[in-house]
Length: 98
Image (cartoon, rainbow, N blue to C red):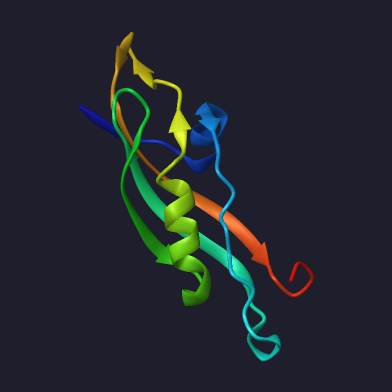
């Protein structure tokens, strides 16, 4: 069985988060924006099949690499752990951090 849950519910189940490591682009290419990734978690809470839905291309790979390392609490439905689909959104602003 599989269920789709909101990003807000999924965020409350997140027990291990990894910040993306983004290489600073040349001065002319400073980027900011939001990368949105669709994920599926297995019953133990591991991330499976992350797929970028939107966001600046320069930031997408860093986001995917980070999200693959996330770990979630079990999501129970009627006491049974189930597979979950959701999205993860991370805002970036490289203009002040590089």
